[in-house]
Image 1: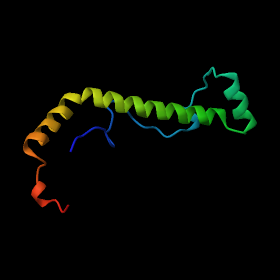
Image 2 (image 1 turned 90 degrees about the horizontal axis):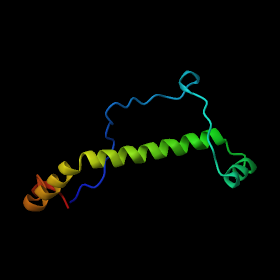
Image 3 (image 1 turned 120 degrees about the vertical axis):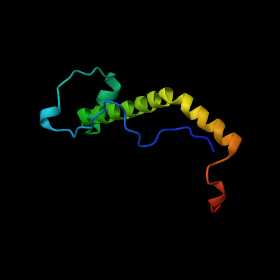
Image 4 (image 1 turned 90 degrees about the vertical axis):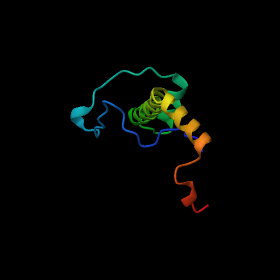
Length: 94
């Protein structure tokens, strides 16, 4: 068994804040014309789509950073499991 990803790991210094009128800030975003035209034609909320895309990109970057910061520990654990097997393996049902 190899550990290869982070799951539900809190990020140092992060404080999730629900969106509200007080915590939002207007910004300018430059988008390719063909994407903007199609999004408007389909009635998409551009701000909401950009926010969702940014949230997805942030989550991916946090995962990458966590994996990078913890790669030594992950490698050490994987080597331990390869050498000694899983802890309590004799109690596994399958």
